[in-house]
Picture 1 (spheres, helix red, strand yellow):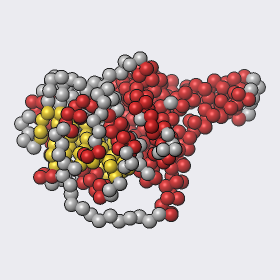
Picture 2 (picture 1 turned 60 degrees about the vertical axis):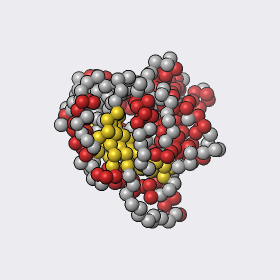
Picture 3 (picture 1 turned 45 degrees about the vertical axis):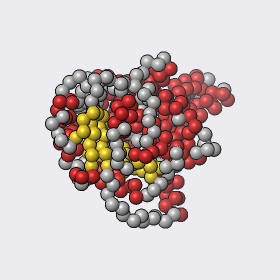
Picture 4 (picture 1 turned 120 degrees about the vertical axis):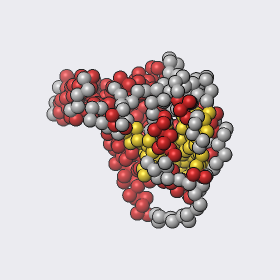
Length: 394
C-alpha cells in the first residue's frame, strides 16, 4: 500500500510541477531577481546587417504572399538580405521566387531535409546576424527591428520570436494549438527573464552568425538543437514577444497529430544529442530550466498519467476513500471529457469545455507515438509538410 501511495504522489507531483508548478516557481524566482538586481541600460548600436533565411518546400500557394510580406518588413533595404532555399520542391515554388531581384534563390532537386538546406544556406550568409523563418508564416513589420535590438547585449547569442497561431471561425479543435502556444509564450517570457529561453521555435528565431554550428543531417528539430547548443556554449537566448510569426493552425486534427508525433520523436532525439545539458552541476541554471520545461514534458509527465490513474484506482479499490476517491472521480471525468473532445474534434465541432482535456491528452499520446517512432528509427528528418488551414490567413 505504501508503494502505491508513493507512486501516486510522485506521479501527481511530476504532472503538477511540469504544467503548473514550474511556471509558478519561475514567476517567484523572476520577481526575486528583479527585486535584487538593477536593470542595465545598454548603449544603442547601429542596426546590423541581417540575412533572413527562409526554407520552403512546395509552397506555391503561399510563397508569393510570403515574399510580399518579407519585402515590406520595416528594416533598411541595404541591410537586409533575403535567402530562400527550396531544395526538393517539385511544384512552382522556385519559379515564383526567381523573378524577385531582392531574393537570393537557392534550389537543388535533391530533397535532403530542412536541416541540410539550412546548413547549405548558411554557407552564403556573410552578415553578423541571421534570422530563420518558416515559409508558411507572416511576420509583423517590425519583427527584425525587435529581434536585433537584443544583440546590444554581448551575452545574447540568439533571440527567439513569438509564434502566433491564427484561428478562423471553422478551425475546430485543431485551433486549440493557439491556446497551447499562448501558454508556451508565457513560460518563454519567464524563462528569458530568469536566464534563457530553452529552445527556439523555427517559425521565427535569430542567432549570431559566428555561433552557428552545422547541424547533423538526421536532426529533426533543427531550431531546438541550434538554439540550445548556443546556450550550452555560454550565451543566453533572449525572447522577443514583439517580434512574431503568424500562421494558421493545422488543417485538421489528423494533420496536427502528424506534426505532434514528429516533434515528439525529435524531442527524444534532442535529449540524446544534448545529453551534457542533463548535468545540472555543469550547467546549473540552464539544466534546471531545460529539464523542468522540456525533458520532463517528453519523459516523466506522459508516463505519470497512467501511473497516477492506475495507482489511484488501486488505492480506492483497497478502501482508501476520501481525498483519493475525489481524485479518482476527477481523473475519470477528465478522461471522459477528453474522449468526448476527440469525437467532437473528428467532426470539427467546437465546444471549449472539451478542448483542454482533449488537447492535453492528445499531446501526451503523441509523445508515446513519437518515442516508439524514434527508437524504431522510423522518423525521417526530411521535410514533412503538414497541411494548414487557409481561413485564418486569407
